[in-house]
Image 1 (cartoon, one colour):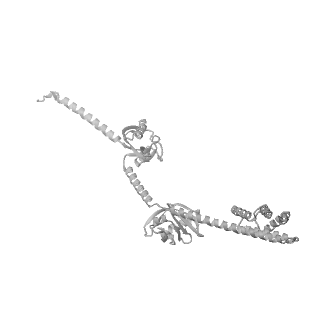
Image 2 (tube, helix red, strand yellow):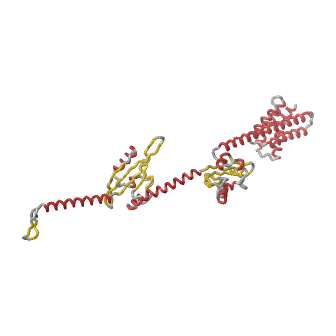
Image 3 (cartoon, one colour):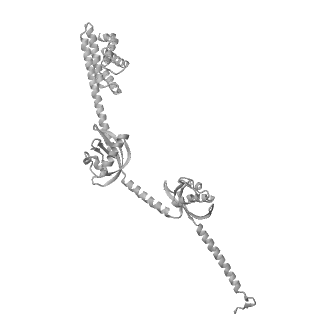
Amino acid sequence: MFDQWLDQRQNQLIDDYTALRQQWGDPRPEEAIRGTIELVMLLLIQSLRGEADWAEGMKTFIRQALSSGQTSPMSTIEAMHSLHLVIRRRLDKETLQHPEWGETIDDYVLTASRSVITALENNLKQHEQELREAAEYQRLILETTPMAILITRIADGTILYANKELGYILDQDVETLIGQPIPNFYYNPERDRPFVLEAVQRHGYLNNHQLQARRPDGSPFWVLISVHPFKYSHADALITSLFDITEHRQATEALRTSETQYRATIDALGDMIYVVDADLKFVLYNAEVRRRLELLGMTGEIIGRDLFDVFPFLPDEARDEYRQVFASGKAIITQEVMGLASGRVYTETHKIPIVENINGTPQVSQVITIARDITAQKAAEAEREQWQQELIEAQKQAIQELSTPIIPVMDRIIVLPLI
């Protein structure tokens, strides 16, 4: 019986198969080659005995081999051809009393080949379906993302794909963008496009880069772009995501201008102005504070430093006053006198709360302090008070003298007032 003949010569057939596969350049180790043919031979013998279904078994075997990625379609076909060849060679070497065995192995190998083809077709169909699904999934992502997406060919900058969001930004129909050269949309193509290409070539990507673009009507606008190399329809391409940041830049520029004007204003004031947070750390200060610190021989940046470390001569009551402003949200006006090496310094200090809406609740987040040096004012007041006191004393002396009845003029001469 053919199954017994195969069983008896199984080791010889496996040796012949392994040698042939190695001769044909099979890259797998010998153990892997032998392991595969041993399974196939076992399935063949069991099928001849009616213990297994050769066609279904081969389909399962081939499907598993293909899905594992360890076997290519061509190597699978070559393996079936090798199996057929070694069995026919062995049959030809021996006295063939059963010519039908040759026909049997031909039929089995043909069936196995058909199983391979069926498995390959199914695998190809599945792969094509997966590709279609992946392409549809990719298309849905590109079309529904809030980002503008652009795909361009590296060689000539031709637009290969653009989503609807880009059409909204450019105020142009997406279909009309396809095929146009991307340099048309750079505001400065001679400078910006070479920079983008060089950055991608050098680093493999370009992330969060700001540049100025141009709409079809010529109007400029600012975008934030990220660029990555990409294969699109077998072409070397760049996929670019971009955001229109024109309003953000305008707001930032307006804020910067406002901050410059604000800084110039507070620096022009002669009062010391500074802002501290809830931890009494410096957040902001003007030029007068810096000037006073330099007069005291103090240098270095004070942003983030503790108020009482910078001004150790402040009275302890000042700390309580700041706590009161943060707690009550009400301003406090005080006058202080500080004994410095240069003498006594009088100041009038306004501690004013800065209120922010934090989680829906108004809270004092910072306190702005305006400290005015009133030492000269205090000195003038003291001088005026002294002058007034001297004037009062002089008036008292004059009244006393006028009330005297005899006024001596010189020796032996007196004047009697006529009243």
